[in-house]
Length: 130
Image (tube, rainbow, N blue to C red):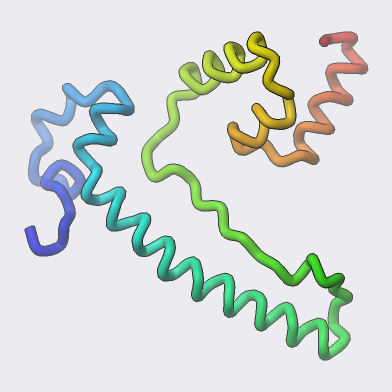
């Protein structure tokens, strides 16, 4: 109880976990642990960003690497702590595309890196796929 970790996450309750088939049910069950994880991400994330920016600045000042002013800003993008249902994600992307949402925005929401998107588009052009 003191740790804030729900019994399901700590393995105390194993027999009843089979009923949590949807992401929503799992998210509700784990809300305390997800909240704790997000608080730690904010706290540790600031420290990681600050330390990394200091290291980049020092490396730039020492002449080890060349940095433009924009290259010194860092942002940590933490993944969702719960598993993602790929079919649900694909269905959502398909609906967004049908509604006219730009492909690059859909890709960003799905966590696709722009360079990966360029490679996919080039491959589609080679194959003649729209």
